[in-house]
Length: 286
Image 1 (cartoon, rainbow, N blue to C red):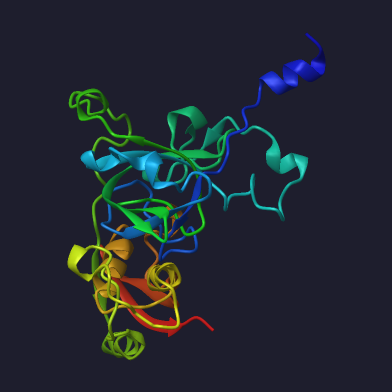
Image 2 (cartoon, rainbow, N blue to C red):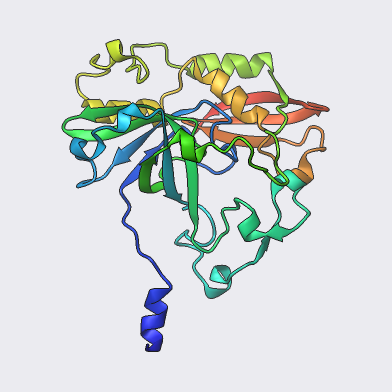
C-alpha cells in the first residue's frame, strides 16, 4: 500500500445532509448536553436528502440520533486552519470538572476532537413537508444555528437506553442556578418582543396560517426561528442562563458581565449572589 493510499484509508468523507436552524448563533449560551433545555429548532434538509420519501416511518419514533459537525471551533473555522491548530491534542479540560483538571479527549464530549463530530439524541416533534421539502421540527438540541448535519437515525429505546450505565465524572445533570431579571431589562425585552400573528410550529391547527403574504412559508418559519423575538422566549432565555454558560474559572466572580446572543438580541447577565444570575439588559443586535 502506498503512502497516499494509507492516508486516504485514514479519512472518511461524509456528505452534509442538512443544516440546523436555531435561535442560538454563537457557542456561548448553548446547552453543553442535549435535552437540558426544551429549545425548539429545525433541521433544514438539503436536496436530494430533503425528499419526504426519505422520512417515511420516522414519525413513529419519539426521538432521533443526530450526527453533526462542530463548525465553530478552531479546527473547522476558515480563519484558523494552520497546522498548529490542526494538531492532535490528547487531553482536554471539561467544564464539569472546573475547567482545570485534564482528562483524555476520548473520555470527554469536548468539541476539540479529531473528527470534529458531535452526536445528540433529541426529541422529534414532527416531520414537516413544505413545498415538497422535508423539515424536521425537533426540541432539546445542543447545536447552534448553522450546524452541518451529517446523519439522522431513529432512537431505539430497548437498545439505546441503558438504565444501569455508569456516567463517570458526570453522573447527574448539572445543578441549575436561579435566574432573575432587572425591571429595566424586562422592559427592554417587552419592547422588542413580537406579539403579532405567528406560525406556531408546535401546533398542527396553526401550521397553515400565513405570517406575511409577501413571504413564503419556509422564509417566514426560518425568520421566526432565527430572528423574531417572542414573548415566550423569556422562559427559554432564563433556562439557558440557568445552565450557567460562563467559563468554569469565572463562576465565583460577582458582578462580572457576560453576554449571550439569542435570536436578534444580546442578553447581558452577571452573578449577583451565590447561585443567582441576573439579567441586566436586553439589547437588539444592530
